[in-house]
Image 1 (cartoon, one colour):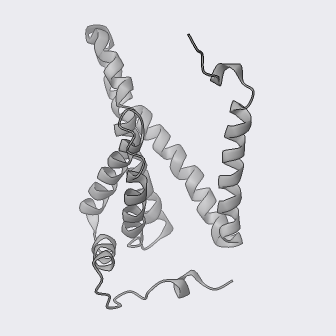
Image 2 (cartoon, rainbow, N blue to C red; image 1 turned 180 degrees about the vertical axis):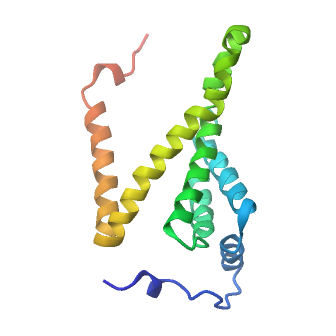
Length: 172
């Protein structure tokens, strides 16, 4: 199997197309700006979820995130970036938990920090651990592992919802 660096343009290569310039600018980001962009991209990805349902935003956000991740020097830097990206996604995507607490905010004010940052932080950690294991395995065994994982996940979801009376539509 060829090295992954063979499939990429070498760093510093001169490319003049607009998308290549965007990719190089994102990969060149450092420090808090890099993590801020990852957080915002994750939050924008939540627009693909209901009630907004802008599903095509997925095709714009993930390439930007991958270009941002191309600037990672080590696997740990990539994992930190993935954590911040997932944190932004879960903070924006789970807003409804915090909104539900405002029904009786005088009684549930203490749970607001857990709903806004605690649950998304835990879920982002789980996403990074799961994704990191998949990426580490894919480096050893290739792209087939990622395809197999996606195929297995889709089939498990189909099996779970197939012939399940709780997932059928109820007509009135």
